[in-house]
Structures are given as C-alpha cells and as structure tokens.
Amino acid sequence: MRQFKILGVAMAAALLVAACGGGGGDGNQSPAVSFTSVVSFGDSLSDAGSYKVGPIAASGGGMFTVNGITGALGADPTPSYNWAQLVSAAATGKVSCAAHTGGFGVARSALVAGCTNYAQGGSRVTDPKGVGNTVGAGYITGPMTEPVATQIANFAADGGKFTGKELVTVLAGANDLFGATDALKTAATAAGGTALATSLVTQLVAGAPAANQAAAQGAIGLAIQTEAAKTTATATTIITAAVTAAATHAATNGYVNTATANAATIGATAGAAATTAASTYAATTGAATAMTSMATAATALATSVKGMLASGAKYVLVVNIPDVSQTPMALATITYNADGTVKDNSQQKLVLALTTQFNTTLQTALNGTAGVVFVDAFAENQRQLADPAHYALTNVKNVACNLTQPGNILATSTTTADGSSLVCNSKNVIAGDTSHYLFADSVHPTPYGHKLLAQYAIQKLVFAGWL
Image 1 (tube, rainbow, N blue to C red):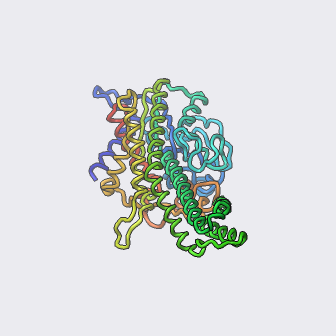
Image 2 (image 1 turned 45 degrees about the vertical axis):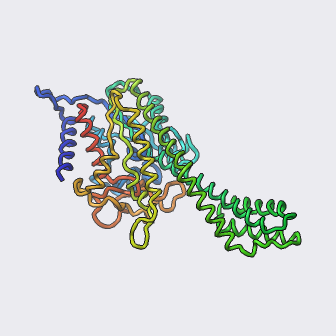
Image 3 (image 1 turned 180 degrees about the vertical axis):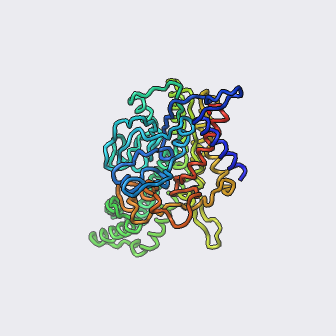
C-alpha cells in the first residue's frame, strides 16, 4: 500500500495548495501557478456530463462511470467525479462542468455559463462519426460525439481564448481505436464474403456442362448477391441460395449439375475459404490499415496540442490511452481450450498493438514540447493491474454495473450503445461492495478508478512545478 499512500498524500497536498495557497520555502503560500480555469478536451473519460439530459438524466445517469443519484431518484452525498474534474478541483478549487449538453433527443445547448469541459463521450480526434454516431456533425438522436478538433474550435467560438493562465487537459484516442477495429471487422467480413462467393461459384459452375457454365455462373452469382444484400443473410443462407440457384438453373435448362449433390461439401469448402480470407486480411492489410489510422489520429492530436500552445496556452496536460487490452471488453475476446489454456488471443493482441501505436506516436510527437506535461496513464494502468492491492483495488477484471437490469435504459434503447455505464448508478450496480472496483463497464473506470488517475495526474503536475 506504500505507493497508494504516497499518491494520496500528493493529491491532498495539491488540493491544499489550490484551496489555501502554499509552496514557497520563504513562507509564500501562493500556488506554483495561479490557474484561472481548467479547460478539458477529449472523450468519455473526461466527459463531465454532456449527455446528462432528457432520458439519461431522468434515469440517474450522465457520466460514464457509476453515477451519483440526482433528480427524481434522490440525492447522493458523494457525487461521482471523473479524473478531469478532480484535476480541476486541485488546480482551481472548482470541479469542472460540461460546456455544452445535449444528445439523446435533446438539442445541443448554448454555452453553459462557467463551464469549460468540452469533452464528449464517443468522441474521436478528428472524425465526427464517433461511437454511437453514424451521421456525424449535428447529430443529437444519440451521442453528439463532437471530435477534439471541433471541441477546440467550439471553445474559440464560445469566446474562449488561451491566455496562458488556464490548465488545459487532453485525453482522447480510445474511440479512434474502436473505430479502427470496427472498420477492420467490416473489411475482413467483406473479404470473407468475397472468398465465400468466389468459392461457391467456382465449385457449382464446375458441375455444369461446359456449354451451360457461363449462364449458370450468372444465375448463381445473382442469387448470392441478392441473398447477401439482406440484413438477415448468413453464410448458411448464402450457401443455400447458391446451391438452390445452381439446381434451379440446371432443371430449367435441361441439364444435370453434378455439384449440387455435394452441397454439404461445397458449403464447408466455401466456408473454410471465407474464414481463411477474413483471417488473413485481418492479420495483414487490416491490421496495417488500423495501425496507420491510429498513428494518424495521434499525430493529429499532437498537432492540436501544439496549435493550442501556439495560440497562447502555456500549460497543457496530455494523458495517453490506458491499457485497453486489459479491459473487460478486450479480455472477453480471448477464447480458451478445454484445459483452460489460451486458444486465441489475437484480438486482444491487436488492441494492445493499436493502443501502443497511438501512445508511442503521440509521445514522440510531443517530446520536448515546452508547456506539455505528459501523463503515461498506460504504464500506470499496467501497474494497477499487476498489483491491485497496492492501489487498494479489489477487482480489476469484472464490471461494477449491472448493464442488463431493466431499469437501465441502455439495455433496450436503440439510440444508445448497449453496455455503457452512462446510466449506471447505485440503483443498478451489482450486489456487494464495488466501491474499489476498477471498471464500471467494459471500458470505463469507476469513480475510484478516476480518483487513481487523478492522483497520478496531479502528482505529475506537482513534480512539474505547476501545482
């Protein structure tokens, strides 16, 4: 517990500095830097309540963690704050709040007076089509997901100026990772589908007489294309459609297609070809494309940070992505043999590689940049996972929120991402003491997890002489 205690002392000292002044050996109790505000940009890890509106607020939600109960559901004496809000409290004595609210059927608000946290759940670095938002800019049916680049522009549009007296916090990239893996999955599935179709056509056309093969190929190909376009299509239905089309064309045109008698073998061969093609694509072209997209996003984020510095900011705290490969989401992709040994953890390895690519690119781009304090949340997260007791963590694998409970609107809503802790609160957490769990849902921290990250970030600010 020694390190956890040290971090606790560091945070307490920083809070004391912010609230009462303190620092100089000559008795001067002024903070090292007198921050006038904390301006935050990023995603759900920093979101201070952008979506605490309409049905989300009514369900006791609004933060991507275990929410404090508010409104009609009662009052919680210990509201849930995320790491960015806690850093704001340490730097200015005030917990930060969402600059704009909206989404989930509620129009985007004007600037909320006194609020400078622009982070939004689901946001990427530059792409407005964030998690849960397939439309892009202006979307309010679900999460707004304004990207970091837009968030910074919104700060300026709201009259905000970087004066060098504010602390800026930046944490983003995880949703770019999710976007990259989604794109990889889509492309790999397409590669598998092409291989499936090619194998089916090749095998079935070979069973027709030479004079009928060209016509048979057209009929079989059309049947595959028609079935594949259906939302209910599966490999099995596509195989059935192809074999049926081959048999029908043969019967209609008075010939025998010898291949249709071996439908099971044809289907198995085509299925194997599809699996191989999808796996090969994912491991080669798909993985390379995903890695490139993560490097591009990290470079863009570093460019945004440097742009803020060039515009007058002097103190920017940049946090990298925690170890997404060790989240419940990534761990759930691992398959095991009957004896408990790992059968396949390729997806988890890919997530680790993408996380590392983003973090390395970001840190390299910002190394030596004056005015930047870099917080290696990835490394700190790995230390937490390796020695949970050291941080007073009681569970680092399971989630604290009961995400299937009927009271959780995300279990049935079509406008939200199922499985998110956005409306998780003390009414729908799992039984038992979850106060020192690390994960609220499959990727988001509990309030305690946020406190650990805040303590680590504040420690870095103290060491930098900013607090």
